Image (tube, rainbow, N blue to C red; front, side, top):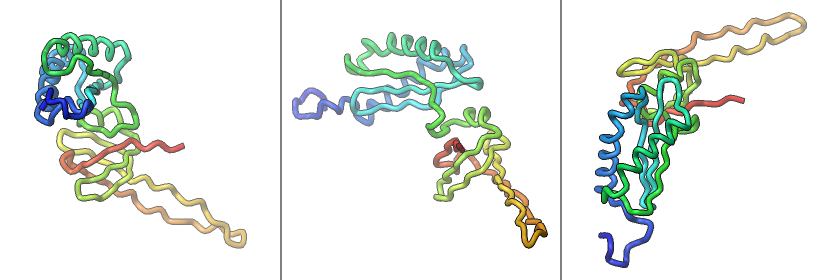
Length: 181
């Protein structure tokens, strides 16, 4: 309960008000994002009056688009009674180190190495080869061993066929892009 005087100053949003604010933000953004061919990836809210909105497009998002969306949301949030006067709003792209959240994000990542943690706990690291409406397809990346020299004779090493994985979005707990340096 807000205003009793004994609550933490960091806990403005309750679980219920978080859901209400998220739904309202989604509602406000839907027509604007559709018009600009952008899509909503995630909305994060903390008990510390911070709202983070992640948006993307099939070709990436520019900083001026984020700034425009931020101003649009501020106009709607200010005076709505849904957020405190001193809330913090950040609108940005999800960034390369954040997990992939929505199927549309995967399309731009075809050919990239992903680490998938499935809901059953299994972890798979493989190359994304296909993105469908219900599932993704990945191919195991096999690094061939160098031929070994044995008394000046080269011994060929057999390479196994890469495994294919088809994973439904509903079976993905977390999907991260793997960076190899």
